[in-house]
Image 1 (cartoon, helix red, strand yellow):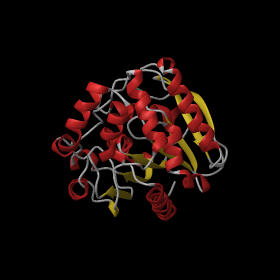
Image 2 (cartoon, rainbow, N blue to C red):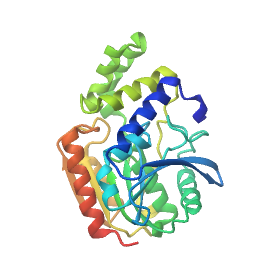
Image 3 (cartoon, helix red, strand yellow):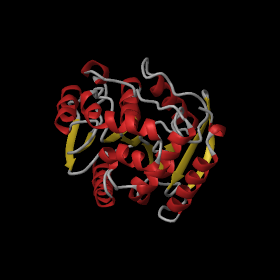
Image 4 (cartoon, one colour):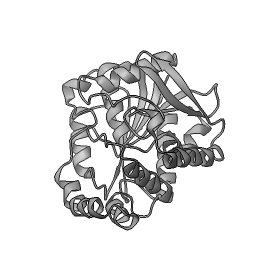
Length: 290
């Protein structure tokens, strides 16, 4: 998907979200970074002299939404949040294939262009799988990692299918706001209306879903990755049962040092987003050594 193909409504919603985030984080900026794989749209926030922190968004939860989710990190870190190619953001190009370390190669190229040898990192949902992919290829590049409701440990089938199949069919038949609300209910409830509206605009624009993240990963893939890892899960996650995620994570990552479970949906409430930010910031301040 080329960034120029974003619908007018999506562009307006993207810009409106950026304007909102500009009021809550210091020094918000967005620029294209030239990499060996082409230009990447990167949004940054926080002091230039602060330690860098790579922030990777979830599926179609593009940079300005992800930065709002983790705004408190800008108090201590220089946040670097790229729009992932193949999703509804400003980075042009198709999505990398989910295997052969394609996402990791893309991230290595971006970090090289930014002259970042090593940094802390936070991955949200789809973005968590990208960090695991990077950890398989460049394990020493990440000083500490927080994985928030992450993909990458297994591919969920029955859990989302049970709750999303009929609402999805109903939405495809009617394609209106009411049926889209019903489709989004198990994912996010009423927790983030602006993000739901962005998702609705993605569907209206006909942007294809990049459903497959990299993974699942095995212990042998991550054997050289020894940096501390925080895992934050949600009790009512439509995709990833928390007990199953923790089981798989402990099996493949002996460096898993903290597991936190939040009573909420995959996309949590404002109150729980605040709590998650605090937990991530505390973890990073304690564990990250660049």
